Length: 336
Image (cartoon, rainbow, N blue to C red; front, top):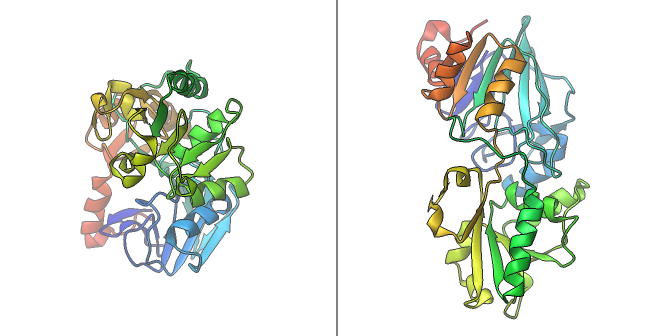
């Protein structure tokens, strides 16, 4: 059903790509992160709740079709539907059905509760393409933690000491999740980066409950005892001068589960919050099992522990590189 070409995952029967790189005719977009939603397609397809985010990233004039979760539509002869991935607002798994066979491309997904996006849904299929960003046994999220309370108490202690608090978080998804888990707790606004502001506004328009926020671009005098949520680049920008010398930093990421952040060792930050927008080891395995798929292709860590573990479970598991090998053989471009 799918093959891996230079431009990305390609469905020959429907003549469309999933999260393609570069100019293509039809792009099915799993979510608005920049490594999945890219400029250049003539026509985009994405979940309805993610249309605003994709437009915010790619431009308001793009040609885009938004579809409700579970709604079937056709691209050529292929029946397509989007199903919640739980990654960020408007994120999707893509279900493809053609000639009695069902494939599901997961995109990025998580199964932890998140008040800012639609919860993950398992989708039965014959073949499953799963991400595996945290596809090793080292990554297991602690479900007992109240991340909102943890961040709030860290900020409150810093505020009592007269210090600002900077939580480094990606502009799309993580920033809004921090605002979401703090919504019941904060009684004062949180300051966010200008890059995150229009994206956060999209969440508001979709009815997502968030803590009150203000854009850092509106700040004209030094801050004292405030909470700032911004990408890591903020710590190297001129805007950092708004905090003076009294501030502490934290990183909100799944990478903090092992004491290492995405930008190096945890010593780069004063504190870490293990908050991931991806499935951990246990959830990756349970998801594959729940789909009932007889064949699985693993992305991101395709030659690693997850492939080996799934094979031990009797599941036909491969790296997604196998899809590229199929594409390289002209007589096997399509699997149906």
